[in-house]
Length: 407
Image (cartoon, rainbow, N blue to C red; front, side, top):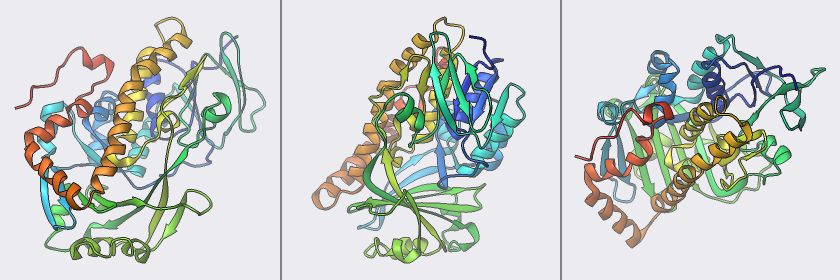
């Protein structure tokens, strides 16, 4: 088969954009196909921890990311019933020094715009909008896929599905299961910095806060160069609506947090509009790859946001795929190796996210024991418990550097 490009990536979200850049910087020709006619952000905030920041820095995106993101100083954890902090995990310069890369918060639209600008400036990438994936046929040496209304199929040696939680590549081409509702919903919103209380503004715009309460929790952190505060309120609920994303009002959110501290309820009342999301997950046991077709990011392993690692895992996937796809012989074997290399780590992150949402929602004696355990960990213990996540490095860096021992 003669090829039109070295790879076809389906889906131009964070995962697809990052992989396209990784491959293009190797001199590979990439077709990046997106069903939407224009790229727009989904959700609001996204946290990019050092493990993912390493990949983006290696792509030369550091200056623009630093300009649009927020390098927060700390994560502060609160018990909502007690209305008091129980732990602080320093980030900022501490994280950058320990892991060799910053911990950034972004509005998703800002992160996507940095990636998209880099893709559009890259001559090795052909970005095709309004091009849903049509029929795709795999042969022994390649894949032929129709895109949108184009007359001829695109012929490539490999097709990567980066098309998100409701991936057609997963369900239609690989026969995988559809995403399942997790039983949790997320209310998401942002509010301008100037709307925040004067006495709390600097603190709110300098750190991530996690509030834990019975059956629910709240996370808020600054985005857009600290011009906005992103809020995410997560709780268990049935989902009976059509679709997976609907508008919500402050009244809808406040009704779920009636017994929470006054200052938290004040924050929840600031946004004029909210979005209500059904949180869905994808079984990471796969298959992620078959022949010359593979999945990455949410298409392979969508997870709860309670480890703040969904975007980071997609970016890590891009780095590993980019290191394996070409120059190592057989592509189907490379894709199987990718799945084997990523599977255990992603599963551990998913298990962590699932455990976190349970622990955050403890009440009574369980909440007391949780708080006591977190207090016993202390700053050093909390930091060490994150090393296995934040200390990951892309393949080209992993052999050159090692994580400092816990102090």
